[in-house]
Amino acid sequence: MTTSPQPVLRPARSTDAGKIAEILHGFEVDTPWMPKQHTGAEAISFCGTMIDRGWVIIAQIEGRVDGFLARDGAEVCALYIRDAARGHGIGRALLNYAKSVQSPLQLWSFQANEGAQRFYLREGFVEQTRTDGATNGEGLPDIQYIWPAPKPEPKVAPKPAPKPVESKPDKAADSPVTKPTGSPKDTA
Image: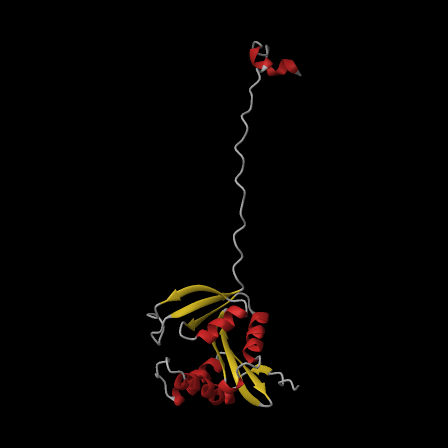
Protein backbone atom coordinates (compact mmCIF):
# COMPACT_ATOMS: atom_id res chain seq x y z
CA MET A 1 0.00 0.00 0.00
CA THR A 2 1.47 3.34 -1.03
CA THR A 3 0.69 6.55 0.75
CA SER A 4 0.13 9.85 -0.98
CA PRO A 5 2.92 12.37 -0.52
CA GLN A 6 2.10 15.03 2.05
CA PRO A 7 1.38 18.52 0.72
CA VAL A 8 3.93 21.22 1.33
CA LEU A 9 2.30 24.48 2.40
CA ARG A 10 3.87 27.85 1.73
CA PRO A 11 2.86 31.47 1.21
CA ALA A 12 1.97 32.18 -2.41
CA ARG A 13 4.32 34.27 -4.53
CA SER A 14 3.26 36.56 -7.36
CA THR A 15 4.46 33.91 -9.83
CA ASP A 16 1.78 31.54 -8.42
CA ALA A 17 -1.14 33.72 -9.60
CA GLY A 18 -1.58 31.82 -12.87
CA LYS A 19 -1.44 28.44 -11.13
CA ILE A 20 -4.07 29.22 -8.52
CA ALA A 21 -6.21 31.07 -11.07
CA GLU A 22 -6.22 27.88 -13.14
CA ILE A 23 -7.70 26.02 -10.14
CA LEU A 24 -10.21 28.79 -9.33
CA HIS A 25 -11.32 29.36 -12.92
CA GLY A 26 -11.42 25.62 -13.55
CA PHE A 27 -13.96 25.24 -10.75
CA GLU A 28 -16.16 27.96 -12.29
CA VAL A 29 -15.95 26.50 -15.80
CA ASP A 30 -16.36 22.83 -14.80
CA THR A 31 -19.16 23.22 -12.22
CA PRO A 32 -22.55 23.02 -13.95
CA TRP A 33 -24.48 25.09 -11.38
CA MET A 34 -21.83 27.84 -11.19
CA PRO A 35 -22.52 30.99 -13.26
CA LYS A 36 -19.83 31.62 -15.88
CA GLN A 37 -18.89 35.22 -15.01
CA HIS A 38 -15.10 35.53 -15.34
CA THR A 39 -12.42 35.05 -17.94
CA GLY A 40 -9.16 33.28 -17.20
CA ALA A 41 -7.38 36.66 -17.30
CA GLU A 42 -9.79 38.07 -14.70
CA ALA A 43 -9.14 35.06 -12.47
CA ILE A 44 -5.37 35.65 -12.73
CA SER A 45 -5.82 39.31 -11.82
CA PHE A 46 -8.07 38.43 -8.86
CA CYS A 47 -5.64 35.80 -7.60
CA GLY A 48 -2.74 38.24 -8.00
CA THR A 49 -4.60 40.75 -5.82
CA MET A 50 -5.17 38.14 -3.09
CA ILE A 51 -1.48 37.18 -3.22
CA ASP A 52 -0.37 40.84 -3.04
CA ARG A 53 -2.50 41.26 0.08
CA GLY A 54 -0.71 38.31 1.71
CA TRP A 55 -3.87 36.21 1.99
CA VAL A 56 -2.85 33.07 0.08
CA ILE A 57 -1.24 29.83 1.24
CA ILE A 58 -0.68 27.20 -1.43
CA ALA A 59 -0.38 23.42 -1.17
CA GLN A 60 2.15 21.71 -3.40
CA ILE A 61 2.69 18.03 -4.01
CA GLU A 62 5.83 17.07 -5.87
CA GLY A 63 6.28 20.71 -6.92
CA ARG A 64 2.79 21.07 -8.44
CA VAL A 65 0.33 23.59 -6.94
CA ASP A 66 -2.73 21.47 -6.13
CA GLY A 67 -4.70 23.81 -3.89
CA PHE A 68 -4.84 27.11 -2.09
CA LEU A 69 -6.52 28.90 0.76
CA ALA A 70 -7.02 32.67 0.88
CA ARG A 71 -7.72 34.18 4.30
CA ASP A 72 -8.34 37.77 5.30
CA GLY A 73 -8.14 37.75 9.09
CA ALA A 74 -10.89 35.48 10.37
CA GLU A 75 -12.55 35.09 6.96
CA VAL A 76 -11.61 32.22 4.69
CA CYS A 77 -12.24 33.90 1.33
CA ALA A 78 -11.34 30.92 -0.87
CA LEU A 79 -10.40 27.27 -0.50
CA TYR A 80 -9.99 25.43 -3.79
CA ILE A 81 -8.33 22.13 -4.64
CA ARG A 82 -7.43 20.94 -8.14
CA ASP A 83 -10.11 18.43 -9.15
CA ALA A 84 -7.65 15.55 -9.63
CA ALA A 85 -6.09 16.22 -6.19
CA ARG A 86 -9.29 16.12 -4.12
CA GLY A 87 -9.58 13.45 -1.46
CA HIS A 88 -5.87 13.42 -0.60
CA GLY A 89 -5.93 15.62 2.52
CA ILE A 90 -4.93 18.88 0.83
CA GLY A 91 -8.05 20.79 1.88
CA ARG A 92 -7.72 19.50 5.44
CA ALA A 93 -4.03 20.50 5.57
CA LEU A 94 -4.82 24.02 4.35
CA LEU A 95 -7.74 24.39 6.75
CA ASN A 96 -5.71 23.04 9.69
CA TYR A 97 -3.04 25.62 8.92
CA ALA A 98 -5.66 28.39 8.96
CA LYS A 99 -7.04 27.06 12.27
CA SER A 100 -3.54 27.08 13.75
CA VAL A 101 -3.03 30.79 13.04
CA GLN A 102 -6.55 32.19 13.48
CA SER A 103 -9.49 31.42 15.72
CA PRO A 104 -12.34 31.88 15.16
CA LEU A 105 -12.75 31.36 11.40
CA GLN A 106 -15.77 31.97 9.21
CA LEU A 107 -16.48 31.21 5.58
CA TRP A 108 -19.28 31.00 3.02
CA SER A 109 -20.14 28.07 0.78
CA PHE A 110 -22.78 27.80 -1.92
CA GLN A 111 -25.75 25.67 -0.92
CA ALA A 112 -25.35 23.76 -4.20
CA ASN A 113 -21.81 22.72 -3.19
CA GLU A 114 -22.81 19.71 -1.11
CA GLY A 115 -19.28 18.26 -1.10
CA ALA A 116 -17.93 21.43 0.50
CA GLN A 117 -20.75 21.40 3.06
CA ARG A 118 -19.88 17.83 4.12
CA PHE A 119 -16.19 18.76 4.29
CA TYR A 120 -16.68 21.82 6.48
CA LEU A 121 -19.01 19.99 8.85
CA ARG A 122 -16.49 17.13 9.11
CA GLU A 123 -13.79 19.68 9.93
CA GLY A 124 -15.76 21.08 12.89
CA PHE A 125 -17.46 24.08 11.30
CA VAL A 126 -21.08 24.75 12.16
CA GLU A 127 -23.73 26.40 10.08
CA GLN A 128 -24.43 29.95 11.18
CA THR A 129 -26.63 31.52 8.49
CA ARG A 130 -28.30 30.73 5.15
CA THR A 131 -29.09 33.36 2.54
CA ASP A 132 -30.92 33.46 -0.77
CA GLY A 133 -27.75 34.72 -2.52
CA ALA A 134 -29.01 38.26 -3.05
CA THR A 135 -25.85 39.72 -1.51
CA ASN A 136 -23.16 37.61 -3.23
CA GLY A 137 -21.73 38.23 -6.68
CA GLU A 138 -22.99 34.97 -8.13
CA GLY A 139 -26.59 35.33 -6.93
CA LEU A 140 -26.52 31.78 -5.54
CA PRO A 141 -27.98 30.75 -2.16
CA ASP A 142 -25.17 30.29 0.32
CA ILE A 143 -24.34 29.20 3.86
CA GLN A 144 -22.08 30.85 6.40
CA TYR A 145 -20.03 28.49 8.56
CA ILE A 146 -18.02 29.29 11.67
CA TRP A 147 -15.29 27.51 13.61
CA PRO A 148 -14.97 26.69 16.38
CA ALA A 149 -18.56 26.04 17.22
CA PRO A 150 -19.82 28.66 19.64
CA LYS A 151 -19.93 27.41 23.18
CA PRO A 152 -23.45 27.26 24.53
CA GLU A 153 -24.26 29.83 27.14
CA PRO A 154 -23.90 28.24 30.55
CA LYS A 155 -27.21 27.50 32.13
CA VAL A 156 -27.48 29.45 35.32
CA ALA A 157 -29.76 27.97 37.91
CA PRO A 158 -32.29 30.49 39.10
CA LYS A 159 -31.40 31.96 42.44
CA PRO A 160 -33.74 30.82 45.17
CA ALA A 161 -36.00 33.48 46.55
CA PRO A 162 -34.57 35.01 49.71
CA LYS A 163 -36.00 33.57 52.90
CA PRO A 164 -38.04 36.02 54.89
CA VAL A 165 -36.09 37.38 57.83
CA GLU A 166 -37.88 37.41 61.12
CA SER A 167 -37.52 40.75 62.78
CA LYS A 168 -36.67 40.68 66.45
CA PRO A 169 -37.45 43.62 68.61
CA ASP A 170 -34.47 45.88 69.02
CA LYS A 171 -33.87 46.48 72.71
CA ALA A 172 -31.99 49.68 71.98
CA ALA A 173 -34.99 51.01 70.15
CA ASP A 174 -37.08 50.60 73.29
CA SER A 175 -34.70 52.52 75.54
CA PRO A 176 -35.13 56.24 75.95
CA VAL A 177 -32.84 58.40 73.94
CA THR A 178 -30.59 60.50 76.08
CA LYS A 179 -28.71 63.47 74.84
CA PRO A 180 -25.29 64.20 76.12
CA THR A 181 -25.19 67.16 78.38
CA GLY A 182 -22.59 69.81 78.39
CA SER A 183 -20.43 71.04 75.61
CA PRO A 184 -17.94 68.97 73.64
CA LYS A 185 -15.16 70.53 75.71
CA ASP A 186 -16.59 68.91 78.80
CA THR A 187 -15.99 65.39 77.46
CA ALA A 188 -12.24 65.78 77.20
